Image 1 (cartoon, rainbow, N blue to C red):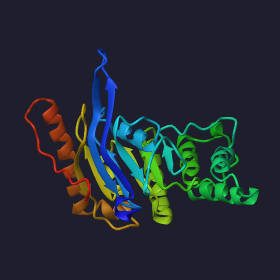
Image 2: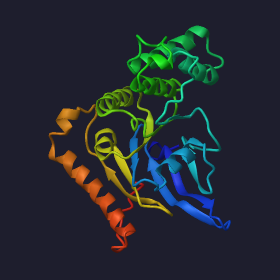
Image 3: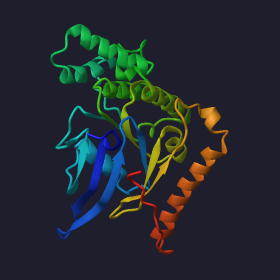
Length: 277
């Protein structure tokens, strides 16, 4: 297993039948290598297949062609080595925050003692800022706090890869920034290899080591991969005072604009497919 290719996504294809039963590729020839401990954002226009790639990586969506290798092993369905956080945390309403996290811990650590499971659960809730709210029920929590429980539930599994499907999409801007900082703190402490889907260019630049930009569908692919050369840990105010932040942002927005132009029939564009960089 190479740490440079901790996650290998090779020639990935997802196709669905059209009304005539003919396969139509939503995603085609998607290639991306991810280093161990790296944070990758996938961005693109709505409907380009970002979440389709993520759910195939999670093992929740069958792969039509190609393959995905995680830590030297080709995936075949879902597994605890890949934890997913969706827009909605989908908490069980009859369980407390502690109970929602503990449920996953029991499944992943069946041979651990009660004390060991308790320590894992309490630690995971504390690192997302819920040490004082772990015995509250979802109905007693704000949307942002519920999402923190979802994040705690994911990191408690000690996954090899953390998958974030627009985890802040339903939150107000202030809560969104607070949770971005929470996630960045977890990245710095736990060094979890992470793939995040986002629509937000600022979020992608602020949180990522690299940004994978997808072309429009159908047959969406990797159009360009941009390296974000900011050291960690990151300070939001400091980064947003740099010219480099806005240079990255402009490059990303230009790519998205070019995709729109191509879709509108204003001519083909050439992409820099440096996915293995």
